[in-house]
Length: 316
Ligand code: ATP
Ligand code: MG
Ligand code: MG
Image (tube, rainbow, N blue to C red; front, side, top):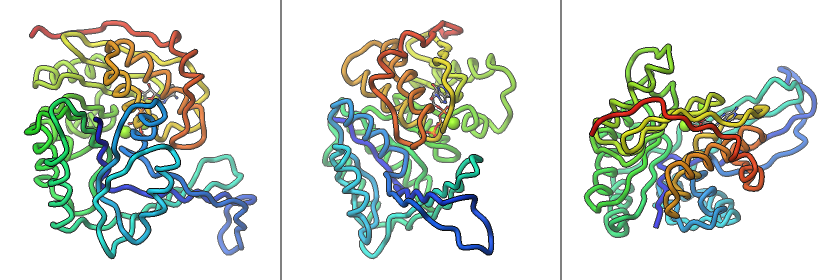
């Protein structure tokens, strides 16, 4: 089984305006839609679309949970969230006008997880995760969630011999490294934040990938948006170049990438097959408007345009 864990999920409320958003004027809405907010939930959407068994878990606010659970069910995602009473799952407002200059995003911090809610999730993982299961933590925890609670969740998975995938940033990523996850996928900015310095040459990213591999992380992926990614696995580091696409919206490419890699590895594909597929799939995401829209058909045909070359390595 694959479990995906979203600790601060969101419902995206996408509001389209007529004309250009203007102050002191009635801005008319011509379309209002709801969508699944990103992170591990989107990894689940990719897995379910590919027919890979998975369960979406994490925290959810009881007040409006049906909205998110229904949206996920419509995408074929099985859910077993820990529901906190008298709390609302946050809503992220995405405002799109006709200026063609991108969207406004208005986000809420999300409810605080009570100690009891945290305990229930810990119990869920301890009761369900079995050796060989994959557990994907993606996205930041809610406000005031302690680094030590985050570590406790990750450790409960490693103790059960689950295969940990962590896509998080800042102090939580630093803490996650101590637990030696199977796979991490910071983007280049998250890697810079982790190191506390700018990375000016791709060579430096390769060195950092090698260093993380030596720390015991089996699959290290640093994603670099339209420039592709650096992937360290088994003793080699590869530079991955995606197909050229006209970028429409790169938000959510990371989630689609992670979903694609995990789906293929879970189905026993080779690393090269998994990376080739995930790179093509996330490129199809970049070419679409929605933050969770991707195309399996396009990904099939774009795979051959993905370039994989070895650029470094470590002795182990
Ligand atoms: P997220 O918004 O989901 O957190 P991220 O910043 O973590 O995304 P990115 O590095 O932006 O992740 O993108 C992940 C992968 O998606 C890249 O490594 C690349 O393969 C692919 N990708 C992103 N943008 C483009 C693009 N414009 N063209 C082709 N591929 C892209
Ligand atoms: Mg990005
Ligand atoms: Mg990301």
